[in-house]
Length: 340
Image (cartoon, rainbow, N blue to C red):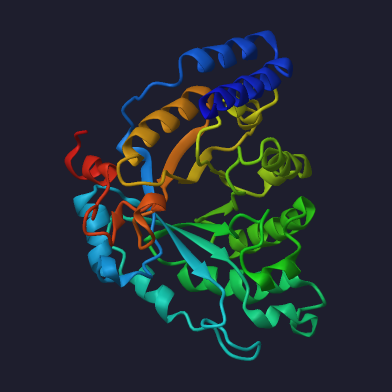
């Protein structure tokens, strides 16, 4: 009974996409229904990895860098510079950059860092702590500008990202920024981009990706479309995307993800993408990533999420885990050995 219901759901979903698609798109949708995307080799030279260096179970900061660069052969690393109470406990205290200094100053030659500037300390929830009554200007003045100024001369840092997944709230105090409204994130992006370029004109300044662009299709796509319509591609050097799961139909359907991203004028980076389970990662990236490249022309780079994770093995995205039965994933072995 469950199998029949599952088949019905798939048929219903496909029928919905077909009814809203053009003839050519309908052909793609039917092709996907009867012949899902096949696995193809990935180009490791355009692959990076997310790593936040907080879990020392995977080694010291230099050891993790060495493993990513020398063992796995990856040069692009996306790191987090979160504005937290630990970094700046009060409005009147100076930011403590020591942890981020350790990460950035430890980067070996040849590694390129994408630094994500995100989150807010708890005291940002009080409007009395905002500059000119504007929380987004405060974020730029108190966090974006000091951080970019500090690392603008770092040879390892190639890009700064203005926030992360603004369409959801993961830290309570972030709600004061109002970023679940695209117009408010656009306001933050414009301020952050202009500040970043004025301080470090030789670095890429890129927009935040939303949550996975096919999530709750077409809701997250609409957030991206709203940013495009506001003019976001004029205030980012890269159009930034997250992509998890499959939902391949949402890529090829008329006015779907493929049509949207193929209309973007800037190069595209997929800065988060991955699969749960240590024996599912390789098949996922060898299916999803080549499929996306075949349908979206501007993709330049993929960042796997993530290097190491300490959670339960069944829903673990890590190339490395703390589970002794699966210390590394099949994708880790592929990066290390170059074979399936």
